Image (cartoon, rainbow, N blue to C red; front, side, top):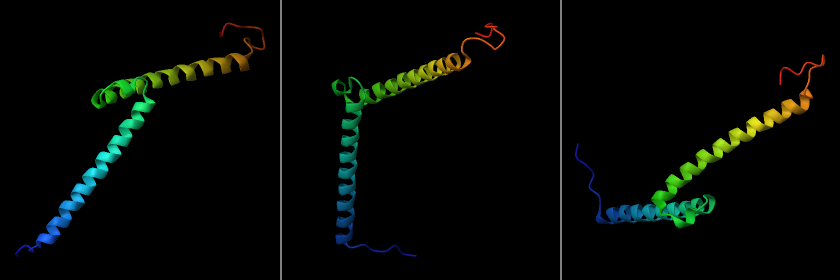
Length: 94
């Protein structure tokens, strides 16, 4: 089976579509990098490739903070609800 022949006009349309998609992708990436620079502390002062590393480090630190805050919250909840002692006066569970 022979392949279909395409007109030069169709090839030009495909090239224009590819260029337009590439430009749209570049524009989207540029917007995403600007947003990341805004969100990551110190992000405005680093090149884009380093920005991604800084963002990854920042995410790790945020997760660690969240875990710490959860643990503190649970500790406060136990302390507040438990009143610091059992009904029989035994505080050995602290």
